[in-house]
Image 1 (tube, rainbow, N blue to C red):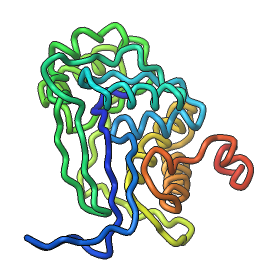
Image 2: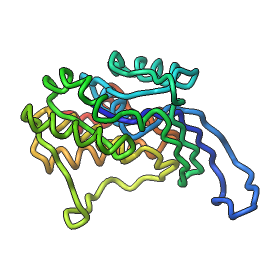
Image 3: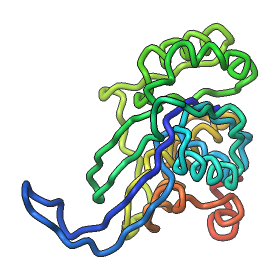
Length: 232
C-alpha cells in the first residue's frame, strides 16, 4: 500500500539550469505522471505486486489523467479521493531541478488517514512520503504500528554505498522512487534485507537509462528477459 502524493509532472531537458532572468532553450519536453508515492506504486505494480494507492487529486483534467495512468499500470486507485477545493499537484522539473506545487496533497491530513484505516489493516507494507500533510503521515504511522506493520526510518549515519552496474544515465528522475517501490516488493517476498536492497538498486539503475519517471520503470516481463536473476 502506498499513501502518497500524486503529481502531474512536466519535465524539460536543458544544457544547464537557468540563472535568474535567463531563458534557456530546452532540448526536449515530457508531460508525465509523478509524485514519490505514485512512482513507487507504479514501480511495485510493474514487478507484479498488488498495490493500492491512497491519495488525493483535484477534480480536474490532470487528476483524471493521473488516475487513468495509475490504473493502466495495475495500481488500485479506488481509494484516490478528489478535492473540491484544491487542484491536482504539479511538479515542473528541469532535469535535475524541481519546482513542486503540492495542491490537494496537503489535504491528506489525519482525517483523511482515518477514513482509510480499514485499508491499512490488511496491508503487508506501507510506504509514505513527506509531501503530504505531516499530521496525516503521523496518523498513518500510528495505524501501521497498531496493526503490526513495521516502520523503517533511516538517517544519514545508516547510509551504505551499494555498487551497481555502471551505465550511461540519461535521466535520474524518479530513480529513488523506483528503488523504494522495488525494495518493498522484495521485502514482502521475504528476501533478506541485503539481497532486497541490491536487487532494488539494480532495478533502479535500469530506470535511469530512459527518460521520465514512471515511464522509465521496467516491467517484470522486461526484467525477466535480460536480467532474470534479479527476480529469482
